[in-house]
Length: 85
Image (cartoon, rainbow, N blue to C red):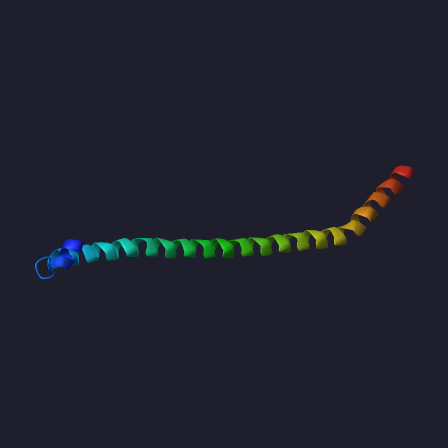
């Protein structure tokens, strides 16, 4: 590239090819960086979704236990009463 700067008219084609190669080498990591950022954002969104689902599952299990505890207690009491007869 330095030789192209010394003789600008003579090596204009070479300088242009080097410039295009430099542009390509800059665009390649930029595109990979954008893809990486998109993958990281997708991973974060999936993590948040997973956390929300986990919270919903725990809420459902808690509600089922709260609603089922009296039923289980009465079933045990009925079984105990039946065994006492």
